[in-house]
Each structure stands twice: as structure tokens, then as C-alpha cells.
Amino acid sequence: MQDPIELDKSPYLIMHRDEWAEQRRDTPMTLSPEDVERLGGLSERLSTTEVEEIYLPLSRLLSLYVSASQELHMVTNRFLGQKQQKMPFIIGIAGSVACGKSTTARVLKALLARWPDHPMVDLISTDGFLLPNKVLEDRDIMDRKGFPESFDTKKLLSFLADVKAGKPSVTAPVYSHFAYDILEDQEVVIDRPDILIVEGLNVLQPARLPKNGSGIPFVSDFFDISIYIDAETDHIQDWYVQRFWRLRATAFRDPASYFHKYSLLDEDEVVNTATGIWQNINHKNLEENILPTRQRADLILKKAKDHSVEEVMLRKL
Image 1: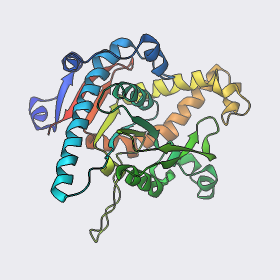
Image 2 (image 1 turned 90 degrees about the horizontal axis):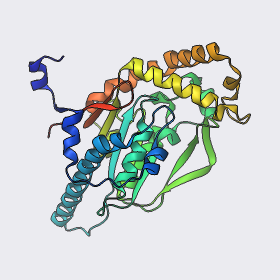
Image 3 (image 1 turned 30 degrees about the horizontal axis):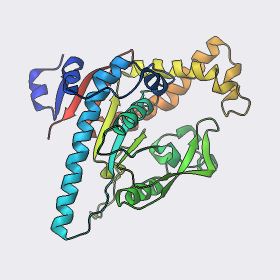
Image 4 (image 1 turned 60 degrees about the horizontal axis):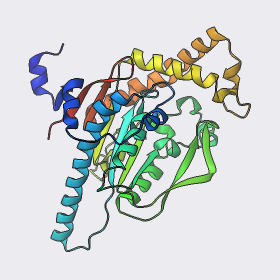
């Protein structure tokens, strides 16, 4: 248990699950049981209760933030004498591999699109801004895929700047987990959404500050609010191994899959291989780069072993 003095000094308002669930108020449940089932992830089974008690209050809070941001933007334009133009609200979602970032992003996209004031909600993963495997191989950093240096940060920053500026039809690369590489002949188009959700491993990573004080934007500079998905490291490792098991029985079985070789492993080899990948790559990335950014988030969702959110930390204004 945290010392009360430490809690008083915390920049966060800390709410346990029951207290957070009360903030749903009269927000209607807009997802069907089929929707909830479809939105779940490989290593977690999403429940209607989780949506009602965690994600509906969160969607209500985000909707209020979007409305406030739109009003502030209108005031600024009025002050500057500028013509009103659409300013997308950008939500960043950070956290480790296998912690449930993608599930959270999908659920929020589905819920937020059902609010009347901002029906156009897009979702993008920063995986699309990973450097192609050929470049990673040339730089001898294939074993650091997912680490900050493996991303084309310049391209990601340019993409976010264009979206935030309200430019039409901004394109982004597409990443395939099946091929484990960027798909050069594909792209996704983001065309002036009301809300853009950006999920990725290192989206809260600060840039190295220049000694001369020149401005270097962070990815998070473009976020209107940021969310960190948190859990005990042992739990995340278990989720990673569980996901590896499920992929071995599904996608890995396809001979065209980059990871097809893992489908041929016996049970002991599967556990040892998945654990080894976790310890040597993903855990190292979590400890070195991802976890240190947790306190930069505006909101932290702390998960229990069963993937349910047990605590919510909301940064005080």
C-alpha cells in the first residue's frame, strides 16, 4: 500500500474500479454482445461488464474533452480572426507488447463513433512507421524491432503534423504482422477525422533535447490526451506467451507466415521460445523505453492478471 503522503503528492487522481465505474452516469451501452466479442484480442477476452464499467466512463470523459477542445479551438480562431477549420482530436495509447493496447483502441473507436458530436473516428497503429526489414537488416538492428530506433520517427511526426493541421487525405504506411514487414504497395488514408486514435509502443517517448534550445517535436506533442495501459511485468509476460500459443495454432500454421517455423515447435519448445523472445526483446524494450514513459500519460489503466482494469489514474488538471 502506498504511503498517504506519497498519494497526496501524486499528480494523479487514483480511482479503484468501482469508483471509476460510477462515472459512467447515464451513458448508454451502444455495443451489442456480438460487437464486444468481435472487439476482443488474442490474449484477452473482452466482456460486456468491462465495457460498461471501464470503457463507457472513459468514452464519456473523452467525449467531454473533445467538446471542450473544439470550443477552445473556436475561441482561438475567433481571437486570431481566422476562418474556422476542423481540428482533429488525437488520442495516444501507449504500453507494452501484449498489454492490450489494440483492444483498448478498438473499443474506444467503436464507442466514440457512436457519440453524436464526433461520429468520424479513425485508428492507426505506429507499427506502420517501423522501418522496413531491409533497412533494419542493413543497420543490424532486426533484434531491436519495436525499439525507438527502429521507427521512422520523421515520417510519423510529418503524418501527425498533417493530420493535426486538418489536411485532407493524409496517408500512412501499412504494417503486416503476418509478413512481419511494411507492405510497400499499401497505405491507409486518414481524411480529416473528428478523432484519431494512435496506438503504439513508444508514442510517449521524449526526443533528445538539443543544447541550443531549438524545437524538436515529440510524437506526444500532437496528442490531446494520452493513455498508458499498465500491468505487472509478470502478467504481461504470461499474456505474451498465451498469445504466442494461439498464434502457433492459427496464423503461424500458414506456410506464407514469417513465423511459420514456430508452428513446428513442440509444447516445451513453444514456451521456451516465447519466453526467450519476451525476455531478450520485449521485456528489455519495456524496461528501457516504454515503462519510463508511463508518468507522462494523462490517464493510466492498471490491469489485473485477468486483463480487467482494477485501477484508473487520471492526471489532475
